[in-house]
Length: 283
Image 1 (tube, rainbow, N blue to C red):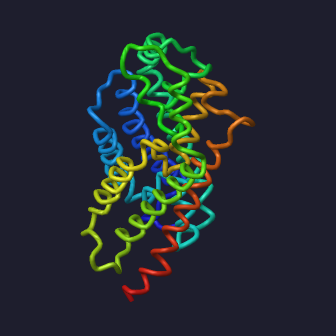
Image 2 (image 1 turned 45 degrees about the horizontal axis):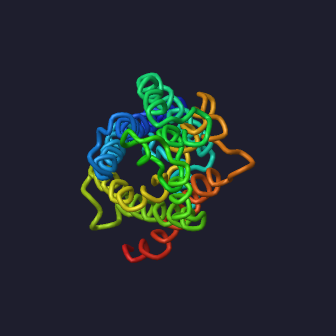
Image 3 (image 1 turned 120 degrees about the horizontal axis):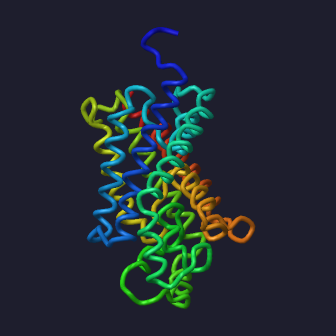
C-alpha cells in the first residue's frame, strides 16, 4: 500500500463522517420543520439536503469518493471499477454515521418532539406518532404535515392520506428518483464526459439533483434514495420508543421494499443506463 492510498480505517471514517454530515443536516432540517415549523415550504428542506450532500462530498470525497449511500456503493460495484471487497466496509460506515447522526439529533430535539406529541394528542409508539417518527425513518405518504397547527391528530385524515399513495407508487417513486440520482452521479464524475462539471464541482450538481428530486418526490415517500438514510435512523427511532410505529416488522414491509430495495434497484438501473447507453458515446 502506497502512502497516497487511504487505509481501510481512513475509508471507514470518511464514509462515516460524510454520512453523519448528510443525515445530521438533512434530518435536522426535518426535525426543525416538524418541531418548530422552521422551514417555509418543501424547497427549504430540499435545499438543506442538497447543501448537506455538497458539504459531505467536498469534505470526504478525496478520501473515499463520498458514496455516503449504500445504493450508490452497490451501483459502483456493478458498473465501475470500485472494488467489491470494500462494499461491506463502506455500507457499515454509512449505517454507523447515519445512526450516530440520528442519536445526536434526538439529544437536541427530544423535548421538542415530546411537545409536538403532546400538542397533537398522540402517544409515542402508538398510531399517530408517525408524525414525529418521520423525523428519523420515512413513511409513505409523508405524514409530517400533521405536525402543523393546534388541532389534535385525526386518524381518519391520516387513513385518507395513506390511500393517496399506494405501495406500488411509492416503490416506483423511489426507483425512478434513485435512478435519476445515480445517472447524474455517474455522469458528472466521469472524466471522459466533456460536459461534466469542472474539477471539484461535481458535488454541487449532485446536491442540486437531490434537492430537485426531493421537491418532486418527498410528498409521496419523503424521498429516501439512500437505504442508510432510512434504515439507521429508523432503527434508532425503534430503540428510542417508537417501536412498531417506526419499524413495523411483520405487519408492513414497506420499510424494506420502498426504502431499501427500491433505491438499490434504482441506483443499479441509473448506473447501468449511463454506463451502457450514454458513456459509449464519449469514446
